[in-house]
Image (cartoon, rainbow, N blue to C red):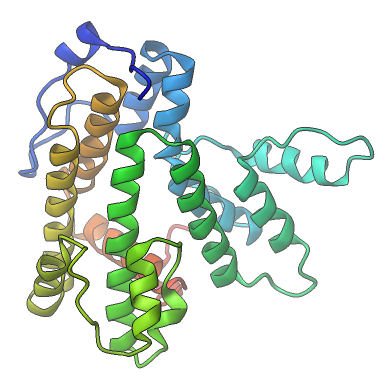
Length: 284
């Protein structure tokens, strides 16, 4: 295993984060800017991999001709997407600006003659992202992304079943849990004893309202981060764990009723892989 760089002064100076609704000391965008200054470029690139899901959302919006969001947290801007499109048409081959899986998804989605199938575009991004992290990510990013994918696939399976849709359509990525879901081929979940959080997630999904459930899933994410970084004191993985906890805490920092509704609608949209409530997108 490659020895990680240590960031003693930076990590020691980071304020404690709590998942109790209290105000966070810095915005996620502000913290990303700090990381640009403090981390070695290779470590920042590793941390940036964990932010690419924000770029997925923006790429879908770009394809649909909508204004991009997640400013300061997403790594790529509209200009980057425009440049990537120009590279596709270049006579002389050029290096892609986007990660390979994103470049390929963009190429395929904009090539459609009719309106792009955003559900299929998101599937390509999700599956490509998982493979990308497994191949190029750090220990923290691989373990955390595996948990996120298992959580997302399990919740998508449950929600699709409740909507009387084929739950297997929503399963993305290739790992033991996604293969378990595909092999069962049924609407009812079959427990996978290898997925440590299966019972806890199912209990939350069956017991709580959407708002309460989302907070409990975020608490579970928080616990997973702490477990992965238990023996990581000053490493780049410790910094990545702090970044993920900051992203989680910021979602619930002073959450107003309006912001709460927007967040929950966005969560449902992402879980089902389609826009269920477009009429509520008042800020587009």
